[in-house]
Length: 283
Ligand code: C2E
Ligand code: MG
Ligand code: MG
Ligand code: MG
View 1 (cartoon, rainbow, N blue to C red):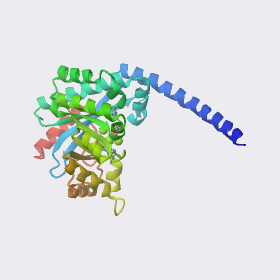
View 2: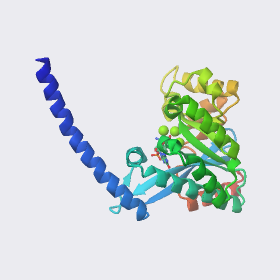
View 3: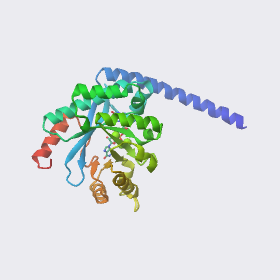
View 4: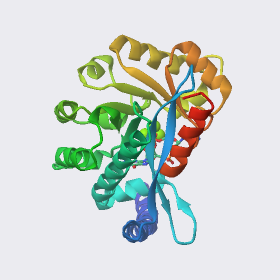
């Protein structure tokens, strides 16, 4: 009986796998074509000082709009770009585009503004990663100390020795490192201490929690405390309402990012948004 079930299970599994693989292959081709036809673009979501609401930086986020006008979420297409290897070219393009944007913002007077760039583990593990980073910095003229790379906590958990070596090399360029989606990967304290990182990003799930239950703010509070103990900056992502912002500020979290402050926007819109702020006396 067990054997039949196993077979039945196996049959079901391979059939759905077939559908899944066909869909992946279809999207892989569409993504490759889309990239070469400029269907992909980068948007920027501001990061603000929670107490003054002053813009401090932005995170670069990739967007894909297909010819029928629909947007495909990066949560769907990034894994496919990773799986197909396209993430290498795509990631380099995001890096260069957002560094150019940083240079343009500085030229418009917004100095002191940082640019955070998401890096996939596939890019990070590629033997040419450091060369790609150095060339992008050199060619765009972006000041390294205003460039931040975001790696996820789950990425940080794998291959600690390789990671420690990579972080040291990145550090040498002057570029800073944030751990994204922090709180979801259960890094140990002693391990974190060994990593040359600059910032922790509290995952959106824990920011949402804050106003959901009585003890909802405990994880955010723990991350803020951890940041303080390890001498790391902390930023909360996915801040959607004033109550969350208020509680985070009370916990001592210095920075925030989320729809409450601004949605991700094009480079052009960001320039306008920053100028409006300057006029209003916020910046
Ligand atoms: P992430 O790096 O954690 O980025 C934050 C995500 O939260 C973004 O989703 C952003 O639009 C969203 N977000 C920001 N504030 C709020 C808020 O107040 N409420 C809600 N509900 N959401 C908010 P997005 O742009 O869809 O990106 C999803 C994920 O895709 C990113 O998560 C990142 O892991 C990945 N991704 C995006 N762009 C890139 C890229 O250029 N390279 C790589 N490797 N991954 C990227
Ligand atoms: Mg991120
Ligand atoms: Mg995140
Ligand atoms: Mg996330």
